[in-house]
Image 1 (tube, rainbow, N blue to C red):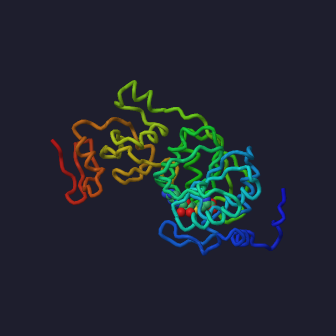
Image 2: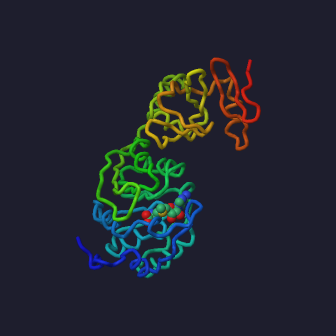
Image 3: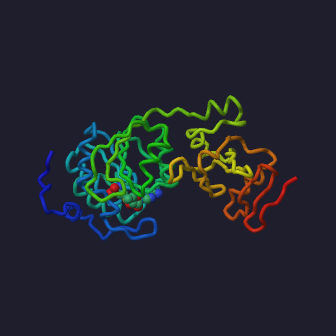
Length: 316
Ligand SMILES: C[S@@+](CC[C@H](N)C(=O)[O-])C[C@H]1O[C@@H](n2cnc3c(N)ncnc32)[C@H](O)[C@@H]1O
């Protein structure tokens, strides 16, 4: 479909932002001021996403909506669609609320909130153009039980699409729907479909009570929400324990970024997953504290605790 405004030579993003009165120099994001071209999805790409939707009356949620272009555009094209925008930046949300009023979008459809904290509404489709890190895992954890839905995604920093492909077992089928009209790290626009979530870990943990589980990717990522499990990492001359809590895939394929302690570890070095050994529980617990000085907890050849300021101390 071609829209009237798809004329050559027009900066459609600027013109439509002005038309909706949501134009501004950009927004501070991750500590830096970014211009609209970097921060927001072009209306041209949003049209591609809209055209791909397999519903015209359902709910679309923009997860980190910025100036809420998707909401305003989709609603102008199709008044029956329900678009919910969520962003923690009050300025962009309040501007979009004023713009939405003119087109007839209720103010409650523009949610000012932190995606880490709030419940995410059920939807037929979600949109994610967002940095990865912990926020991605928290968002996806909330979407885990929202099946069925589609998730549209545009790469942000180079690891969003690989993580969506690998780290969330409740996403299946990744399709490229089109090429983005903006310069992006990965030039494609992706559509994922959900599948019902079924836990890998629950059955395994029940069977052997969490003792010596064979490592596999999906299990490690499920255990990222638990403080009471560790991974056994084998180096050439020693073995040590990393807590599974908040582990993520690393930027390089076949690596993991552990948080406790903060280390990038290649998958080949992870030998087992198991419950915190009782004799080391206090040290493992202490390592979660913000100012903890405990770094590595070494299991073999001798049990040792490695401190930031004191080096390795033997435990009897
Ligand atoms: C790259 S922009 C994408 C904006 C919009 N989805 C688009 O594509 O045009 C990401 C947005 O996510 C918002 N954001 C980042 N972290 C957030 C959080 N924890 N809760 C809510 N919004 C967040 C930022 O304020 C920013 O507006």
